[in-house]
Length: 252
Ligand SMILES: NC(=O)CCC(=O)C(=O)O
Image (cartoon, rainbow, N blue to C red; front, side):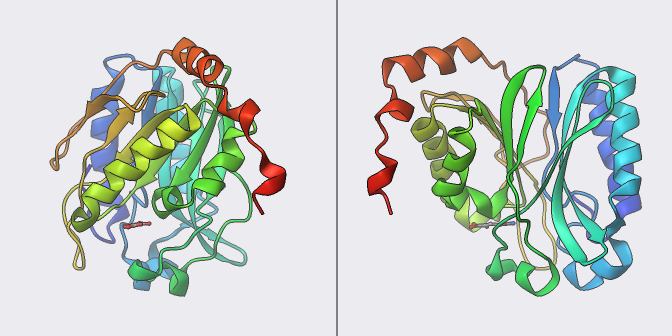
């Protein structure tokens, strides 16, 4: 989706329409992009961040429950007692909040470090019995961070992003690499449109554990969908058993 700069009201309305449109197809899971309620209006976050994520939690929880779908609700600027974090919220089919992950690596080029606090813990959660991980945008440049999730059994990596167009080739290459090296599905959602500083790349995509693209959007707004065959993860992990062949005691 495109994101209205610093305008949560407009973004909740737009997201609701899109969620209802996508939910009509009865998917198992939906994913939204990074900072979808505010965009990168960082200088105004103290006014527009969501306190404890309360508004977004109620909003997404009721949609997840209404349609009986899992929602990886991208990330939002969440106002906490000790600052603002860029936080992913994950809801199950009952509308229960089952995962919360704050972006670990803040992206200096977009001045995140000046306005946001980094997270301190992993983004692991289980959806419909599937062990999954969620990370945010710049995090995909840190393969060791993704690996730390995969060694704990994750089979699907969800990525929410606001990734700019000039680095579209990095977006695609990094996501495909994370899928191949971890033999996992990558389900990645990136915003489209522009803000005062950037034009964004779109190209939300799903990649299978062999590195093949299951579906990919263009630079325009779109709802793209694909099917995940988890047996594929398991058979590739048996065929080329990288998790057994690792020699981590020599890696430091
Ligand atoms: N929002 C982000 O974290 C952007 C990361 C990015 O553009 C990159 O090149 O890395």
